[in-house]
Length: 265
Length: 185
View 1 (cartoon, one colour):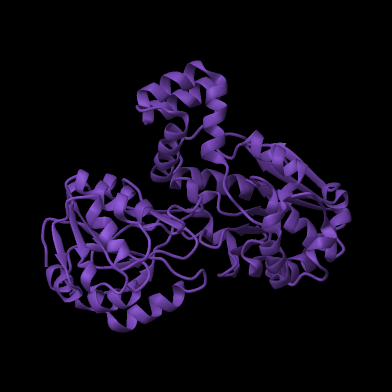
View 2 (cartoon, chains in turn yellow, blue):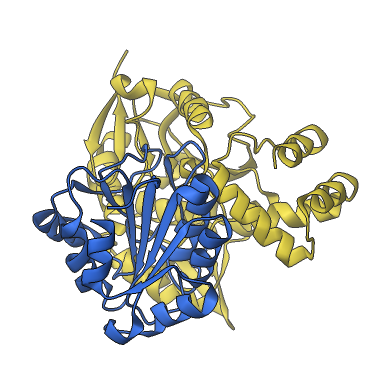
């Protein structure tokens, strides 16, 4: 397994060496079954010599499933407790790191739109997986999942109905252009890429659970370097700064939503 | 009380909560193993379960947190909506990957990762349930030399899950709840 991950890093530059190993092993085994490889050595050989095969594997083990307004109370908290501060800035920059297929990016854009600050906000939505990022950019989702999303939206304190933000066609929906206008989708790998701007809010949910402590610390440092003083950091409901050296630099605003505010230096 | 083992992983589904309430209070303060429980439940139900078990158990009961070390003498409960895995360095990690056997947390996901980490020093227990989750995981534990315990299906509120586990591997002990409690406690 070490050899495989080392090989992927050297050949393709994707660094999975500091991913939490148990999940990684599951995903690789899953990928092996799907692609018909019986041994890790066979998988390693094919990955190193067949780039399309590698892309296929990457897709199978890095697309995480998410939903709109996942954990609605988090969006309610952002809406009522974070947005009023963001609204005091003339221009607002938000980084949604590890946005996967984009459902949560659109959720955040809806909150900002309803609170009247989307127009002066740029949301940078990044992921290292191009296939996922393309789905996010297209903003097209299967219609059968929308019912649950609508319920989440209402629980999150939505002011309208979710249907105001998409057009339905056959069995899919496409998110409205007005939401996309202020979102910039870009490739960024948290394991290897650097800071690219000063942010007022960083959202990174259910991404760091896949990393080991070394990589978690790297990513949190990257976020810390990107956040302005008094900036906000929103992690997944089961993630925290507790094990990080940076814990003292942040104030936990809500232990349930895992929203932190950086102290002014 | 069994010696020579470092962890006990327990999987329970329909009817499993009552079963856990029967077994876990019998575990003594000096238990040399960490206890890790996956109970399939309603998406909102996790905190109630921890609270309720805490009132009945001698051992401390808590939700398993990402990156937390797995310590002996503690009962850890998997949180709702996340898979729970045990890493080689004996710490927990969570995942929001797809459901396995229609479940997240999935018993197989916990058992299989724990089997890799603990090898022959692991005890796996499958209790009442209406799902085949846990069968593959228990087989993985046996394959790495661990000990397999299954609730006697005849005594389970829902026999499907323990029966599936029995069909999936050679089990060391098939017992009723009192028997499992005595063996582990």
